[in-house]
Length: 465
Image (cartoon, rainbow, N blue to C red; front, side, top):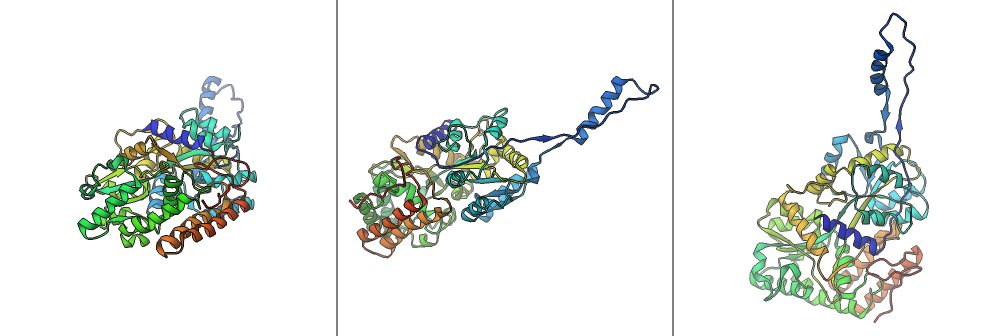
């Protein structure tokens, strides 16, 4: 599994990064106790010095993680937040679950209220552009004394710089497919579920629909559906995310999604946020979602569900590796406490708890994976197979958009909904939403990210093909 983690990290680093960071060194405050000469009749000086050592220890104070103002943009759902807080309770750390836009605005405004920020890779670049983060190089150096953090993830935290580490890697995750064993007899003839294509997936779902008399494939349209479009469907069919948004290949893909794929989906997909729930209920047999939003199905019924890599399209097997980092704002009121939080969250045993309880994968070596919960093991094997597929095509999360990151998600959603759900003209919709996408790129100045080709200036949406 560690080979997988390094592989994902190298993929992310090779494809470019968009996070920022800054430098903070954890310091220890110590008060030296005053010593006075002992009277001649008292015990010898040697014994006196032995008594004074514990006095110094009693007054020595270290930065406490419990004193930190910790804001996390991860684990927002109530169940995830509760599990995460339980992990933090081991060090009496409190966390505030924030939203990306307001949190970025708060840091850029110089509020001086946050000691440590936990966020996706893509949250850090706009903060880095304004020099709003501390260089974490010293913190990383301290951590490296007793733990090994994957070098490629560290490389991503540099955001293209040589020596300014914008965040310390914290965790990583991705999105996968899951299936009920009852669906396997309906696989198309000759199809390998571990190397399936999008065309075969649609045929599989159609077979289930005809055999069971009900659609039993599902997608989380009310959840992280924009990641399905940005990181899986568009890259697999077009080879890009932004640049090929209105290409002829994108038009063909939308036609296929409208006429072939979507009719095989459970109509309740419009309302699904977490796919583990309809899967456990038996309403859905084949689904796509984030690893953290499928884990309950694998944990509760490990003999009933399998995991498998995302399907492949004409351009490859698009998938989205997700990197999460921990950074300290430049105006943090208690950066030493922030560094203590980072030290705690990067301990191998704590990384193991996050893996077991929240299905976010470690970024440090030495995590005991010998006794993983069975559901986590299923996901780990699937993540490994997906990342190491010969046709794997990694697509990074959108980067460089800052507080406007939600706009790109809405553009992709709008395009799908207008075409597939509302039946609007494909060329018209892709052209109009493509113009909105180009405007967003121009106004934010965001350069392209993988799988789109790197270049200077704002990423360009190619003309309709």
